[in-house]
Image 1 (cartoon, rainbow, N blue to C red):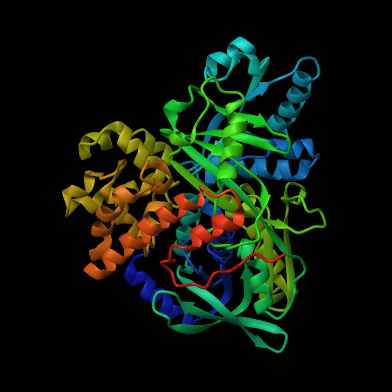
Image 2: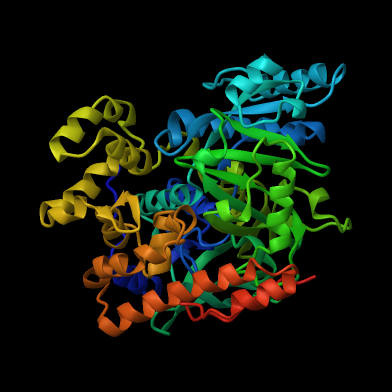
Length: 572
């Protein structure tokens, strides 16, 4: 069994020292899911690897997705069979081998709105969806009458559908999955570091030989030497390629997608929903005691780090969903809102809904490989392709990828763990539902979380303002999961920022007090962390009252970034 590495403050100091003292085979830039997957792919091929991320792991697109592992029904309609097949194979790997503790199947109702041709058309698509990916562990789709569909989803207006079909996809907490991938890479020997920003690339003639990395927390700099740099920065891809002094083989455009989160009791349904819109689809996704509703698809040309949802974006989702619900959702029902940017391979079409969701990999010059585009679901394939593209820099004897056989931390022994839920609950004197919550977030690492309470039993108490979480989960985020700031804890180690009506403000001080001794914060630093988080939430709320992207962006930028990184704007 692979031994987990605690991404503690002490480990971060050691990792920074290694950056400057060791020569690496691979330097991965970008700590989203593609970068974390690339670090894991390279490390499990026996290579020495460093991974640097300028903010927090999954702080960009990889924490702001629809949180699905899916093939993408609409890509079938676009006749993109290869993309769907590849994604469904990856979904099955996640469900059965790589991350069964993090990825689980969920049902979706596809309401039919017409008569005649629509049912056989959708049935043909879902039949292909059931079979094109090969082996599957999720149930096949089934037909529903209007009565049957309304029995599953009483929230729908009777006149909004003529029948339906039920099919299955899979869901994961994207930020937690990305973090676990990065931690798994560390367990296989990779040096992983957040708040580590590449400010320059090193050269020997035309060859890229490494990078100058800034510690965002201290301002220190170090030159990292590597045989190849792999650029996995998503919407920042063009920026890194410019640091190399080249335009690269492709460019990336940012497409904004927003989601809203509402309480589970606001939509009476036993299943998720997928609704057709004029350009795409709208998902209503079960998320614990909430629903996630999204998404939009519009071009974004402003700040890449903090894309802002506008009132117009939110009204679009409310309007499309309200057309089919008996009791429409209102602004007052919304608990959380988040906006993310898709890195799309740029083309001539101005409509981002038409840009490619496939990925591209290019070795633009010796020592530099870039990978961009793609879907969250296919991150592992993207990572393997990126490392393969570096073969010329790493040697012809580079082993093939083995990550299809590598479980993420917490996956090994997970089925046996599920059989012990009641015993663990009795031992820890916790409700079974709470232990289930922990196990579905940490898998077989759950004992690491619980053991923190051996020295402080109060850690098994609920967190104020977010009682679904334990205090121990906040502490564990700092002791084992590399969290450096309050925002890391409330936005990505937990999802309190989108799940609580206060958007985490009511939990901010208690959380900061829990981690202050671990992270070495004095009272002034604790107060600044709380103030920065509260200001961020206030700025986001203000931005969501604006109708235009430019005004929303200006409101969001009013809150200072807790990590002192200059804003990076999208390019045309």
